[in-house]
Image 1: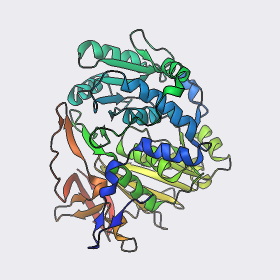
Image 2: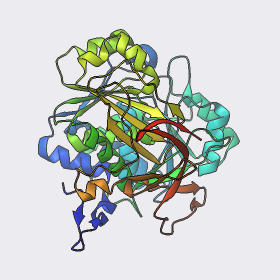
Image 3: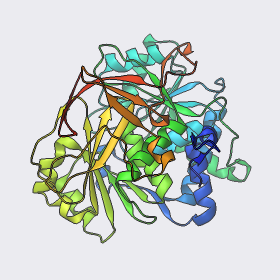
Image 4: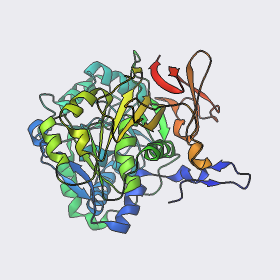
Length: 425
């Protein structure tokens, strides 16, 4: 697929990216090789979710997404409505995101770890009208939590959940998928283009009140391409992620990267050292995605030695160590809130090699995906398609005008010898 071309002036042209949809990438891959695996759960997830391990081929995932999209498109919501997705790391979270997008609505990703008060504030701030969640996650009952929230916020019209333990008054999505299978011949695999610009809504961490931001799908894809510049992932390999898909970092390094490369995405909802070690011993070339703070545990368990690469996601603010536990085949990803991701292979000395400089050895279009610079006071400024976000509210996007070339990330960088050694607010 042609991600970018250059105009006759030599300037990069990303205009062709505006119509990119993740569900469209899934359909395109299914048409080429429908029997290949795309989504897989961890084997141990029944223990904490009551749900069996599921694995979907491209063809199977397309069918699942089409069934769910048919349901979402008949809820009676206006095109482009926000549908909240509050699910653990798993195949259902990926399928729900793709189905909401394919139905013509906007996925709004809600962290499962948030408190009831935080989730309530997020629903009201974004004007979410429907929720997709799960009946059981460990000792938590998310579907019951959203029932309580719906009784206080009348704008929340539809509650949907995967089982078990789906409460009365909540739509059972497992039953929806079963019923839709009976009329599958009438399910249109492509519901047509999403009204306006396809995209999703996430929430930056660290603010007193949830502040939704909208990111076009083209920007999400640009962020994932930036990661894939730093790590080579081949078709048929595996991305094993411990990162929940409710942030830019989670979606870009997981589902989006898998769709772009043809890799299988295996989602582990909770960190289990023994289960992870067993998964890495099956002989599949695996790229392990994990939070940066898990590095010592991953090294102690020997996970990095078994992986083709270890992708460590660090959420700013952060301070990098001079000597780290994982040296070989490590890639550091710096998440600057929900604005952008910076990714670089780790240096041979074990120190993160993150810089704010363009890589001159790359073609111009790729270098222009994300540009960063540091002001005298240390503030990190960002530009390019991979940093394209807007504030969002119940009234929609706050500023839909052409964004400035450079935007303040809200973070400051400490730089030594050209490398970023720490990021503060």
